[in-house]
Image (cartoon, rainbow, N blue to C red; front, side, top):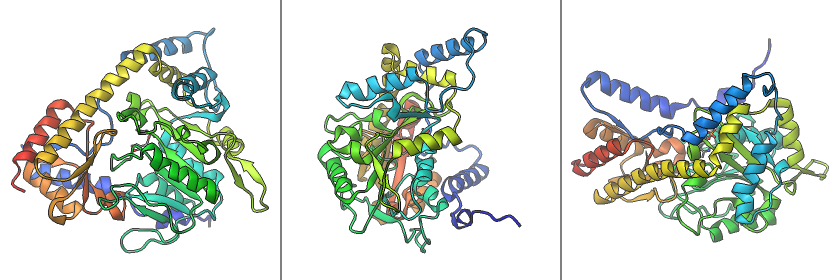
Length: 410
Ligand code: PLP
């Protein structure tokens, strides 16, 4: 009989969001008139920018004419988009990246998940904890995680705790780590690393010949000057870091799907025979075999994000969400609860009062004030005792939810 990849069996079920949905449905059935406000979603709610919609329409019209129709495009992305990305996201910050170091894709989830394809099975993986679950689960699928213990941690993964005690700044690994996933601004904690803090990681990676997989999906939400938008703002990062970007949260592309990955030609990893191979070559090989390019119309839409009007329009949307983030922070602080994030990211990470568990906080919030958030423990063992609220709702709902929380007899 055919054999499966056994790693898919040891993978834990995606328990978090299904459990949240189950609890909310059960509550609604028991209380049909309840007005539940969801501040748990990680999806955007505002419509696409008019400049993006216009570019989509134009591209669709091109596809409908024989003279301008396009079939398969380059697997790495059209040159018009790669050039625009280079100019706008890197050259404008004094970073030299060439278009053939940019790989356009259908989003950062696929790229962060797929990148492991070109990395050896014996690498030791390090992740911050709590963490965006894709990094861990895709390494479980690849057989790099080992076995899971009772509190959900995998014995071959190096966990880098991010807690109130270290103010969410992870300490450098004490054990060997070959591949280090960093996500800043962070999902779920909403916290950042300042330039000097990120530099320590780049220096560490250079010294230990490790590779940093840097997820910058929330870069557009940065408001403070000392927070790097790209890891390549740090000297030496082009030797050791891969960067993942997404149009999802930046420009409302969660349904449209577009992102890109930067693989500098200077990042190398070793064969078992100690030959140094550029990852750019391998990622190109992987993508040209397993990926057939992002839709032309979507790439035209992504290009429009960088136009003058596009930039202004996506900024208005980001400001809209960040206004919600401010409302949430203020409400939580007024309630006397400690919270983090919400300044350079659309996530607010709160420390549950009186050390109640993440799930107990969830249940009480749902049952007593009809507000839904996300239990921190769902993002990893060190998320226990924390809770995530998101700024992607409407102003009205966010304001109402915060009023309920402020008035709550907790
Ligand atoms: N990376 C992080 C840290 C995220 O939180 C998300 C989505 O929530 C993604 C990547 C996925 O991005 P995309 O929509 O581009 O696949």
